[in-house]
Length: 350
Image (cartoon, rainbow, N blue to C red):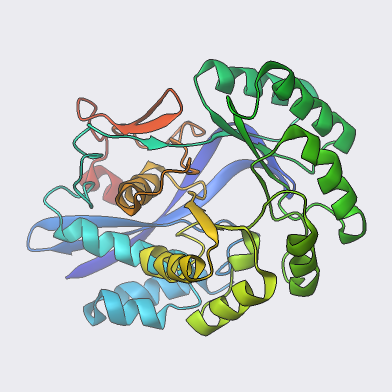
C-alpha cells in the first residue's frame, strides 16, 4: 500500500463571518491510498485557530502517517490521538479504498437516493441586512430549522433579527438554533439568555468560551432554554476525560464534528456517553470539502437521529468537487443522477 498527502485550498464564494473573524479561504488536506490498482481518499479537515491539531508539526505528522500506513487504520488511529482531523482522514481513506466506489463508504437508502437527512439552514454572520437576506432565502427554500451565528454584531440587532423570524413563523413552523461560538461574557450571559427566551429558541451553542467548566456547569443548571456544547469538546481525547466533562457540566446537548473529535470512532465515544447521561446530540460538518461532507453525511444517516443535523452542501466554495449531494426543502439528498467530478490522476498531478 502507498500513501500520499496533498494540501488543497478551498475558496469561499463570499467572505464568511464567525465570532472569530471573517474567512475567505479554508485549508484542507487529503490522504490518498493506493493498492493493487485501487485508490481511496480521506479528508483531514483542519480548521486553523480552532482545531486541537492546529500545530506547527501538522504537515510532518501527515508525512509520518503516510510513511507508517502499513500499521493499519486502528494502530494509526491510536497513534494520532492528538490529531483528530488526521484520525478522521485515515478512517475515511481506508473505508474509501475498501469500497466498491471510492465515494460510497456506507451504502444505504440514503446513497441509493431514496431517503434524506433533515438539516439546519446556516445563517452566517454579517451586517443586519445580509443576515436578514439569508434568513429570508432559507425560509423560502423550505428549511424548518435555521441556525444563526450570533455574537459578532450588536446584540440588539441580533434580537431584532430573531424577532423578524418570529413575527412570520412560530416555533412550531421554524426551529431556531443560535451559535455564540463563545462570544458572550460570563457576567452578562444569563441576562442575554433570558432576553433570548422570548423567541422560543431550540438551543444555544457554546455561549461562553471553552475551558470554563465551572461557569458552564452553572449556566447549564440555570439556563432558561437548552445549552449545547461545541468547542468545549475539542481537545478532550481520553474517554475518561470525556465522561468527567459531561458529568461536571451536564449540558442539555452536545454537537459533534468528526473532524474535531477523532472521526467516527471518537464521535461514537461521545454519543455513547451522551446517551448514558441522557444528553441530546447531533452531528455537524466543519467546513470540509464535499469529500469529507459526503463521508460524514453517509455515516450520519446510519445513526438514525431524527433531529436536523448540521450538514451543509459545500455550496460555500467556488472550487469544491461536484458531487451527488444536494439540498431540497431543508433536507440533504444523495442524487444518483449526479456524478462525482473528481479525477485521481488529475488531482495527483496538481
